[in-house]
Image 1: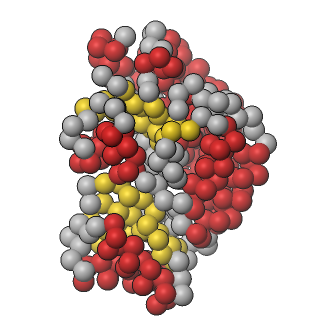
Image 2: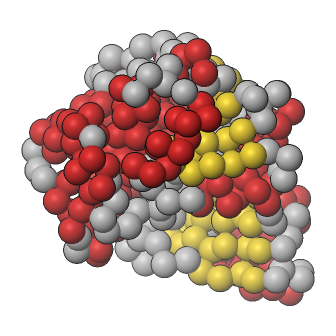
Length: 315
């Protein structure tokens, strides 16, 4: 078995996340305490008890999801699971790439929490509410959606591009509201099974996020980046990387670039990975991987029971 760890992105948050981990493992509680201290507030209280609308805010959801992922990774390590020798690659979906970096030592936990708070606020501030939009397009090929986005952007003098390629025929487009709406209608006419606007607060992973990319370039320049103990397969170039300077640059490009998740899972399958373990809240990535490559085994690890079951076969 060749193992890769994947780390979930925004949308996997839920009230109660991490609470059982904190109550069961001192290592997990220490992670949540450190994140609270780094942010100067009790984010863990919002994670454990809500309210949901506060947890869902981009600036909270991003560090919260990272914290749960790192808590799981730290518990596994404390129980004798050696990440460096047992995991071949790591990857994360959008903000999950930061969780991957924290887990493999590129950044400290405190720095990662602060970076994600900056990232969440910068992404939210980059585009006024109502100016941008995102839409899920189901059932059309990548090339067809690219062409639809190009035409919609041209017709409206706006921005429209593929933000996420999640696999299984699921693409997410992002950009100017009128351009995205135009593209969604064109996708329906082109035979998409579904083309629906998403209830998001900003148009992530498109050119409109350039102010946020600039904010992240500044923030990343001010933290120490180390060589990760496990190569990170990045969203932007779908290739394993260990050079801290390159990884930092790719995180800046990621803000406006596409999350190439389908290609990432395909890359794992083509490069000897047989099992994907999703580390953190939810099971979204495990489900996506199943649709992309059924030959890959998948397991989601986010509760004490999950951890113990995983260690029984992977100690």
